[in-house]
Image (cartoon, rainbow, N blue to C red; front, side):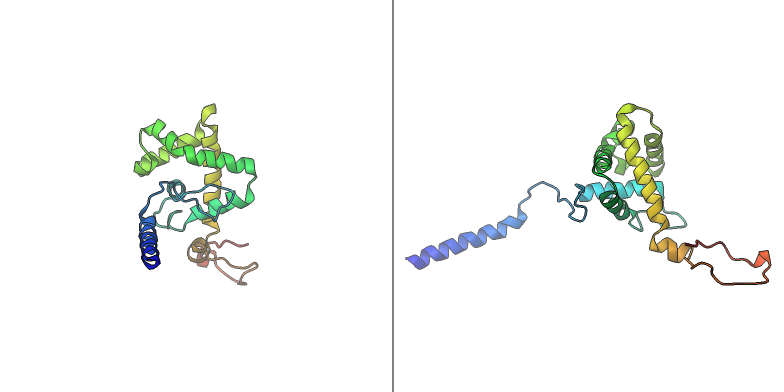
Length: 184
């Protein structure tokens, strides 16, 4: 009789374990890499879209192509004070509401021109209730440009880095000079 009870218990336990992965707990996971911020994958994707609006793809790769959003989150997580982190997160979480209020649609559904207009509107707003959005966009813009300029792509493919003083050329015509290089 005890074997039957043990087998029944084992069958119930196995069935329960099979069903657990299919359960939806409907709470989005928080990414562990940014311990001071509560970043979810959807917020990270929104930040990537905002960064790609600031530096879109064209002849060069865009900000989202080189994953500048990771640089932005690391800078906010590691280099900003708690109060500034909270303002940044408030702006990031409230940006979709700002988009709905201004354009009646989510940011991800807007065209590139509408996105650019919305970001410019957010950066130039004088409304006191939108100062959190303005501060968020300023921080995002600053870190997007910084992250793009120091990226491996920029430093190796677009304007290769060379050490100072570089190579010496004594007698060179100006017409023979190559494009300028970023020197550190």
